[in-house]
Image 1 (cartoon, one colour):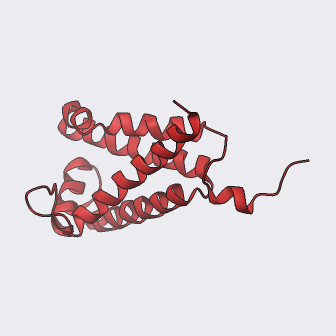
Image 2 (cartoon, helix red, strand yellow):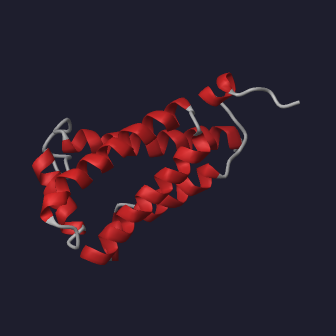
Length: 143
């Protein structure tokens, strides 16, 4: 399989995963397939997996995570600073996986493939060849 296509697949898979999770917390998905279904349930889950964070900061954490997921997804889709945003995505997913593990056990992190997604994002950050990326249009050719 061609590395260019694998890179595009990783970019899209990670991005769509982020955007699907964001859509879920805003009630876009039907109740039959939702994990949270609304913002309040998402914040409750955020508190569950971050019991060491004061309740007063949970809305801020939820907003920061949501904004990060949206921004990272958009930048990965368009291929802007792909290596940087892939690495940031890997760290965000790793923090999520570790929070799940330390608060509710490792099974949930394995079942939802969060460690795998994190590893995929880190692998994407190492793929230097540009393909269908905005960076191709804005970077200066090297002499």
